[in-house]
Image (tube, rainbow, N blue to C red; front, top):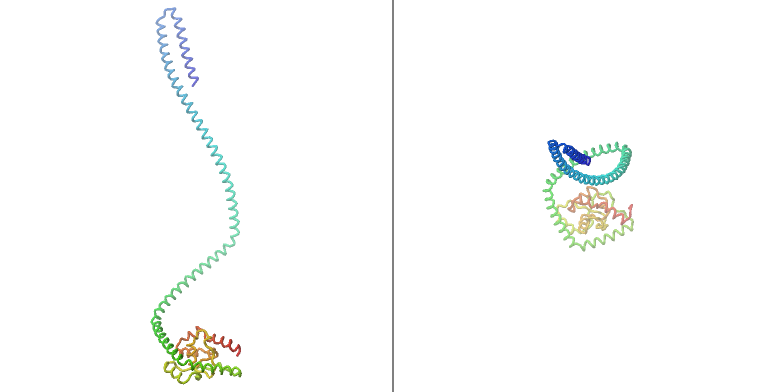
Length: 326
């Protein structure tokens, strides 16, 4: 841009010098027409020079604008370069961190591969266990279906047993009433029974001292003869329980404390005494038929005797009192 301005100035000066020189030469010769032409050319050149000067101003302004814009672009580029350098440093640090992470991940992958190689032998066992689990699940489903069918069957049976439960409740009420009547009778005859019990204990002690034998364990309860209670008491009991079946008895006048057996209280003990059951040995020798007979005689269920384990309790009480092996 400076070269162009210089070139224009030199052109203007050269034109001016040429005009002056030519005018000086022609003035002396009187060539007015020539001077006019030169003056016209000079005016044209002056106009051209003014236009060039104006163009020079415009170019100078453009140059200043370009310098200012270039300065701003340089500053912006420097700031951008600084940011890029900072970003490059950060990216470099991130790359180093990523490289370290990649190395760590590679180590982790190597460890995982090693673990997978170690777990490879267990794959077959896992498949076998999976097959076993599937088989067990199938069996469980089958058992669940069978259980559901059984539950439905039980529900049907429960519905069928509800009328029986009502009748059983009525029978139980009757049994409770009979037991209350029996307790009343025994309360009236309590003193007499106490005397008999004391005498029987004394007799039992005498028999033990004399090493007498106890009643044979194989005898049936149905063939025994009553040994306790007066005829008046037996008559009252028979009148209160006319459907109690055949009476059980024992030829052994000894008496044990039957209340030591689980499930036998004072009332039940007196009831057993009334039917002739007075010793641990008798109860310990019960058979299935004996259990049924006693249950029918005392108005209870055979399952109660089995549930309370009278036989086992009698054996334990007998061994505790008389010693094992007797």
